[in-house]
Length: 432
Ligand code: ZN
Image 1 (cartoon, protein in one colour):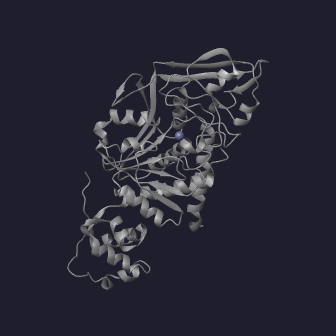
Image 2 (cartoon, helix red, strand yellow):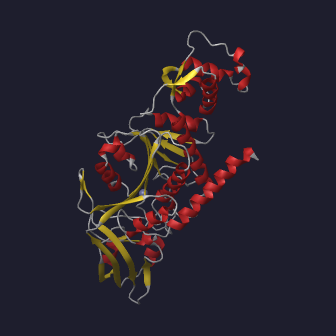
Image 3 (cartoon, protein in one colour):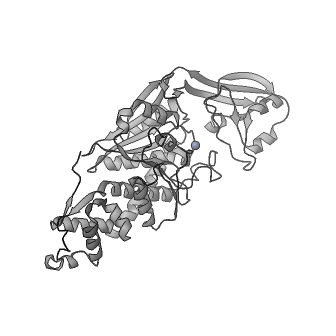
């Protein structure tokens, strides 16, 4: 029974994440507006998120918090009054941040405002126009090809007004004031892998950590991409210095292999922790160097902050055809992949929690392990005892020792416990 428990827990978490994604899927989110608020309120049923509202027009570094966008309805009707595009059927049909419009126009003019995917004629693309005032519709290439000449009625019942940018934040204090930052974006409408998978996995992790003893303080951010991260950083300059490790979570539900993108620092403890976990996980995976493109790691790793924040995903954005289309749906994300991603993330967090530096209290020649019964105490792992004793000179963490010895972090951890119990090892760093 015991050996089956991790597996069934992983399956249960995967199903739970999937159900959460299914609940959030219909909401029309954007970088601001009621879809974001509804999303955060749904999450509040599980975790005590604090919801922040930042007024439009607020200066945040080189950016300005934009006006708030909300939409009630939108359609395109042909000259017989039939809806050929209907926002109520799929919220991707309207370009996000479209300004209101209600007029008639010929097909040739309408086509300037239509977007489709030639390579995937039955999918509806996802488009935005946050920083340019215009409007547009997205539709499948198949439907576009069926539109005949004539006048069309175009209607977008949206509002673009002074309001707020909304984001959610949850801080779980630990024994230490040093922080682990976990950030996901909440600004995409009905897309599952790109944003909802990260939201669901972050929520499950927060739920798990709420009831666990914590060394670090954990800060979860549920923010609109780019402008949300910039806004949070602008409002929290005093907090940033406490962040020791961080991850951007996104794209965690597709069936592809795990991909970790390193922080700009490149060899921060988060980078080595994830690399170590992956190399001992048996999972197919890739590790990418940092680049100044992608998700909110771009902001956290901008040179002024240079935070130790990497990005955990499965297939990177743009490398799967379903990306930013109606095919990133509930058939594309899988409970199995979500469960596996969650378990990996939990392992990374456990590594961060347990990775501390110890000092060998008996450094002059080897202490005699036999007389303490230690050769027998952990089955066949006397090597781990010897490595931990030898390298615990105060300059190397347990993870450094795992890396240097080729042993798994968990066997190094096991050896550490035995040595501490036998008063041969002592933790170095006092808690701040
Ligand atoms: Zn996206």
